[in-house]
Every structure is written in C-alpha cells, then in structure tokens.
Length: 374
Image (cartoon, rainbow, N blue to C red):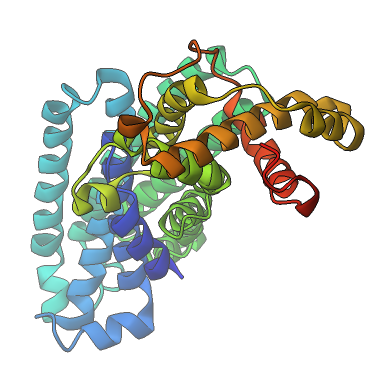
C-alpha cells in the first residue's frame, strides 16, 4: 500500500514546490518503512553489502531524512520557495553526515555479526544521540509552527490539523529523547527495565505508526490526483457538462475562437486550465453567434411559456435563439459567408444556466411540431 501511494503521488503530484517537498517526505518515509520490515530487509540483504546489519543503519538514516524533509516543509512555509533551499541544504548535509557516522559507529558490532543495540558499548550511546538530535530539533521547529498556526486557525479543521501536528511533535520528542537517554545509560553498562525498554524502542516499532499516519493523510491527495488523471474531478465533470454547448457554439458556429494548441499542450493541460479555456471559448463564441440570433417566433415562444418551468424559461429562450443562429451559420457556411451581423451585441448569458437549458432547448427545437419553426 505504501509503495502504491508513493508511486501514484510521484507520478501525478510533482508541480508545486510544496508537492516536491512532500514527495521527499514520502520517499524517505517509504524507504524507512521498507528497510524496517524484516521480510523485505532479508530479501534486500542479498543485494546490499553488509546485509541486514547495514540495512538497519539505512532505515535509521532514512527516518532521519524523513524528519529533515518535514523540516523542509516548515522552512518552505516560513522562508518561501526561493530562499529556503540554503537552510534546507544544511539540514540535509547534517543528516548525510550522521548517516556516514551510523556506518562508522556500527562497524565493530557488524564485525561481530550483531546489531548495535545488541552489542551495546559506547558506540551505542553515541549512535542514538546522533539519531535523536535532528529529530528532536525537527520537533521543536514543529512546536514553533504550531504556536504560529494556532493564532491563525479559525475553523474546526484548521484547529484539528494544528492539534495533530502538536501531538506528533510532542510524541516524537518524548520517544526520541527517551531512546537517546536509555542508549546512554545502557552504553555505561547499566542493565535494567529502562535500558531493556530502550533496546525495544531502538527496533523502531514505535516509529512505524508515524510513518503509517504520514501516508494515511496523503491518501486524499493521491485519490484526488487519480481522479484528475482519469478526468473524474469536479473541473473535468464541469467541462463535460459544457461540452454540448461548446460543440454547437464554438466548434460548429465560430471555430475561429478555438485556441489552436499542439497535442502535447492539450494533453498536458490541467483540468482547471481545460475548463477555463472551454469557458472562454464559449463566451467568445456567444458574443459572435448572438449577433446573428433573432427573437423567437410567436409559436415557439408560446410553447416555451406553456411547457417549460418558469425558472428556466428565459434560459431556454436564449438557448433556442442561439441554436437558431447556429443553424443559420451552418447553412450559409459560417460567419465569413453570413455577412455583417444584423443584430447588436448582447450581454453574455450565464454559461452554467445556459448549459442546463441547452438539452431542453434542443428537445424543443427537434420536436416535430415545431420542425422548421425557428
């Protein structure tokens, strides 16, 4: 599941700086979870020098990088996309340095075929102090963010988000501090319930819920990206609703308003861009076609008044007048052959209301009782 969410997000959500930064959190969170999983670690051990023992260091490093990537999100918010990179690179360089030190400190234990938390020694204490330092720093930065966001949170949703950030930061700071303290005590040769509990914490079981929660909150944005890919989002559905209107007015009657785009640009357009362009082309087409649209004849006007609900009568009349103009332009060969427009420019009607009335108007126009009435 984690791999699926990561793959979908990396493929579909990667435009804005915040999306790219979140993707870093996702990548390192996924790697830390995968390296932590014993079954996966054993399979990867065949391809990684040092096997499972090195993979233990790798998942610690990846989790540190997950926290650093979260710090990048905080920095992006505070310093902006143009200036946060310098500070963020310092965090990344520090994490990479710590990652190298992980391998150095665990080397004596690996030579004995043991995990560092099983071999103990002074390296054990130093290792987990290094493991904790950036995580605790990230938690305190999160506390500062919570204090800033709490003043701006107005709705229940915003307050809930702030509360969740605080709880994760508080829990992470406590857990990591206890882990570092226990490692220091154990490296001094103390063996009691506290140090044995620390060895359990060093296995990472308590950190996996954090990774799972991180991916859980990414599910909505991943599903939204999938909906956009398959044109199931609200903007795409609205564009499909407007398609009959666009096809008759722009494509058939006034194709000159359609912006010619290369195929790669059309395929790469976002649903928002596609909808915006469709609306603008409909508006431009209406401004042209309406100047060839006369008033309805009495028979059709009376029929509309008798059969169409009052709340959409005016919209249906506007649609019928435009349809008559579309038919006329199709018969004469377009606006170039139609000559000067005989009617003055009209106000543009509400496009959404016109789209809702368009099927009703088409049904009336194609009715046998009124064939050729317009």
